[in-house]
Image 1 (cartoon, rainbow, N blue to C red):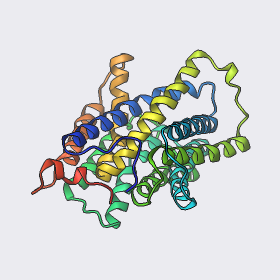
Image 2 (tube, rainbow, N blue to C red):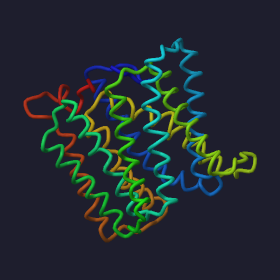
Image 3 (cartoon, helix red, strand yellow):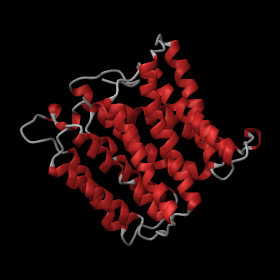
Length: 312
């Protein structure tokens, strides 16, 4: 089984690790909406993806080698490159090019929330059992996210819509590949994924955007970039990759409809934004979705439930 940089827990420790990892992907990735918005004021989107993932890959590789991990053979390197290619190179850049081709923020936000449906579908095709309750929870979660986006722009050009739907599809395929393909040792595997993704992003950025000069970034922009690098990538993306190996596809992917709700709640708590309209219906739907996904399967103890079943 592919592993990640978290050590292998068991028993009660597994439940604690799952809860911690979920808290990270729910809360930290929910706050990255704001950080990305700040960073994009001075950094073009392709270079933002290229810089943070390339630097994250270098730092992770140095850390992995320092703790005694070794570079694997070409087969495992290729497996890690496939994951990075889909999750970073394709998924991240599909979002950028979809916005350039023309798509409203509401439709973009809604399309992204379909990712766990795709990921769960690939798992089901691969032979993993998925209960009706889990499917119901996923649909309710997506519906809740749609309601959160109702007051935003849903316009789109045909090309913009096509690229937008490619983003969650590519991310789900990369996520599924990380569950099914044998990966290198924890740190090296993550490093290769991010380096491949970051370098491909850099190649695209060179073709479409001017090279940025970090020396001219404001302190606010630099802080946002560091937040995305350290917490958004090095910490939380590792937590997500770990969840893919130790929980169901549905639970690992549930962040995609929880993140918009977290971002909205943080806006209300910190920014004084007012919650009304469809939000009051959307939040309970998302909560119900999580309850349905988290409930253990019948005739299983919580520790052996489907939610905590490894990928293979």
